[in-house]
Amino acid sequence: MKEAVLTQADFEAIYDRFGVRLRQYIRHQVHDPDLAADLLQETCLRLLRLRFQVRGERELAAYLYRTAYSVIVDHFRRERRTRRFHLFRTPEQHGFPRETTDVERAFGRLNSKERTLLWLAYVEEMNHSEISIVMDVGVGSVKVLLYRARKRLAARLEEYGINPEDPV
Image (tube, rainbow, N blue to C red; front, side):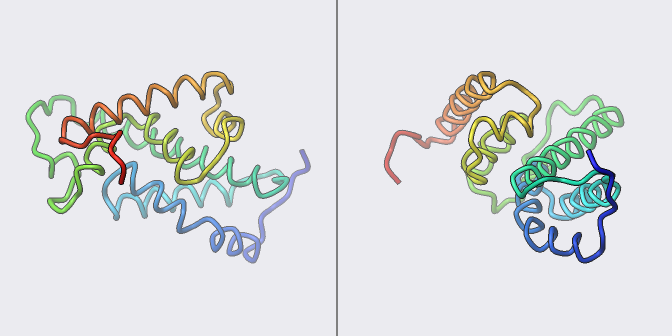
């Protein structure tokens, strides 16, 4: 690919287009607005270091979400290394504020990969091939992983007394 340096105007245009959505995605992964802002900043720094030309908006979106996912996973790996034994934690210690809804708590109890799959499919409305690029898995795997993530979310919702089959 052609090497190119991102100009400030290009970066600002990209941030205007994707910044709010990326922040929402990250916020739903980490349950902490301050941490989400830090991880968004790290994602943006990686974008600024990008040394090749991105072709098209869909490729750019895939790059940004793949990068944000990597930043989140890296954060949790570092965090896991620093604290090992927290068996009995309150919801607040898990990062859930008291006003969090049961749906958000159920979503938060999924692992990062499951949350990312569901977010990309249903919030970002990406198709299976776009998700496969972000998650770096095959298209067939995306279908299976999404199926499993939906089942696990349904089970978590039922734990809070919410029947996912009920109409909204």
